[in-house]
Length: 498
Image (tube, rainbow, N blue to C red):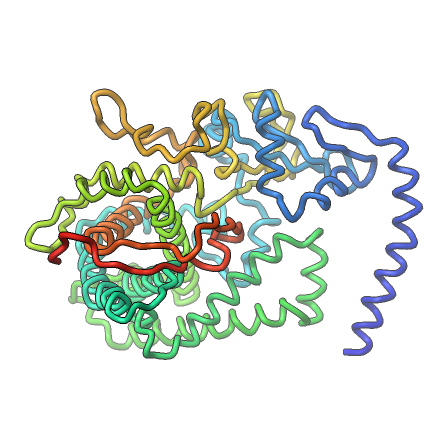
């Protein structure tokens, strides 16, 4: 340990001794590009990037708002062709995600970041391996039986755990962290749907299973790899098995062993003639090997957990700030003998508009990036060199006057309706929270079903009162979350007899 510390300290000293004189020389030859940030020879936009690293999403949004093309180019170390391109231009996004899909894979720099955690799962691969998994998943997600299974899982989780938990908070006058509650609910739900396994996270009387805690650590450590100033930093730490990389390795081991054991038991006890409704059973029945099946279900756990809980958390908070909108949501919620059906959920257009509006302002996934396989030119004229990282930025897009008008910062669900009042989903290239093109999210409709079910069930019964009037901070990682949680008092809604 002492030797590692000594090596680290010496490398830092030598780096600074070399860097300070170099910066003095380079700053005299600074240039400001047309995006409003300074770029220097050799080190590119490193200084501007470092100065704004604590407010990266706001800095990107400001630069994109000032750019006539809603695109910015950040030069990176070395060659002027080593660029990171960030865009909020729908034409560019359609070009990247659809028109020139083959030229913009995730790329090795991205798949390396999540490779230890997600392996060869669908969200972390390109080419034939992605195509094979996509076809399998597309078939399963389109099955009516899966849709019915999802609704039955939600009914059980909400009625037997969520509602009693909130009722208990009402009776005892307890403060509840709704972000934590919704994350636990989402993890229970996605585990039942993906694995056919119940981690019982929403039961606060039980200890959280090791898989759940390890999943948190692995997701967080993988996200922090992307925050490193250069890939070699975390790769060296992984090689030396130190710091966060050691924790990541240990957490991934726990996750893999836990899921491997679930797969082994399922193979031993699964009746091939049985109607196996969870995704794990369906993937096993399709004849794939254990490693691929494991990585596929881990990817779905990742996608289905924090995304829906984040979207619901921010909408609950927004509704506390807009009581008239909340009342309109209550009118939109339809019950039949206290039981929600799939047909009921389909009719809740105003609630869907609220969810879309919330995700426009607070997208669960703040940005997504691809890497150019070959040189290209974007529709707005931006040159793309081979190997460039090309990022589209849903958070900034939701704050573009050019896309949403002068009231773009306002929470206005009615913007999702056309005359004479019909709901209209925006183009996935203007509202790319579910991606678009061949990689468009297969779980989109399942996500809306889950969010509608939970929101309708809670809002029809309870009122939430935040314990703080201060606007919470938006924290972007692999999926965004509310800093410090969303702590509320829970009241029984007046007139509710459910």
